[in-house]
Length: 315
Ligand code: CMP
Image (cartoon, rainbow, N blue to C red; front, side, top):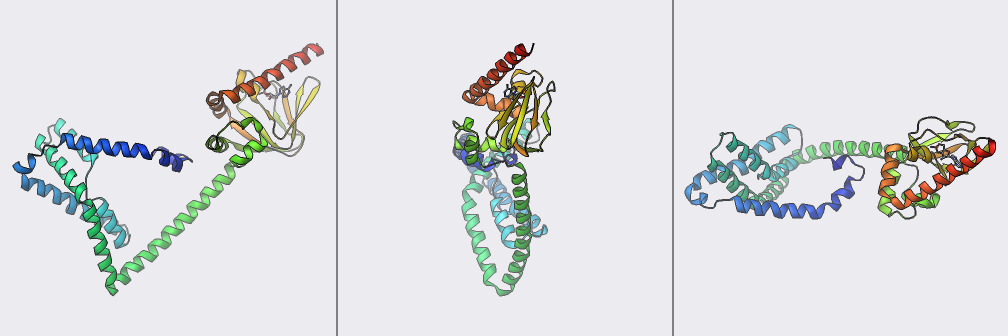
């Protein structure tokens, strides 16, 4: 759920696939070690009752809920087949039940037997559901009802999906300054980053624009942003000197690195566009990529040195 919030959730899900396999193995080994097979001889009827409750009872409840929510029969049947089993949550609940004296130890063995058998039977449940769906479709009257429900449901789903896509595209457009490939063309500083690292960096950028004459940074202010010039030109005022920076340059890094107030005024000379990073993102970025941090820090100290020189000239 946490990963799902991220823009990179798809990638994270793919990268974590090997972990899923490891957890699946761990799950089955631990169930096997907890299970006491003698329960099958001691309480065969109880095991059968628990299994029926899981495979039939639980699925019927799921079927009813999905149908009541207005989904077509095929969806309801597929959902109930998926839920015709129990897993690790039931072990946790059974464990808690035993701790609080609400359940006897034997209960855990029944739950484990239920889990093992219901998981084993699950492919058969799916096969049975497939046959049931096919039979429903071969009956013209049932098929009509089924198709109608499906058509309206799909139309609704498609509409939801389209509007979600539209929102995502708007968000991406508002967020995006340039593509990860363009990043290096514009800012050779980021050459050493891998394609994935570029992608992450681009997602952290936000766009800001400025009109000619607009002051972007005021000397002495507290710093919260670093600016990468995408388009246009700005002027840095240090004493009487005016230093011009254009596309591919960056500014606002000195105060973020040193923690001191802004060292100079920066004013836009043209209609300018910047990719900006917040203080937090910039700091994280520098920590993660020491080689780039060194290059930025070197330029910052060169600028500081130049300003010191200019100040002593003026004095
Ligand atoms: P910062 O001090 O955060 O805010 C003002 C910015 O102007 C500063 O960071 C630098 O990015 C930039 N700057 C200051 N001095 C110079 C200089 N001598 N040459 C180029 N840029 C400078």
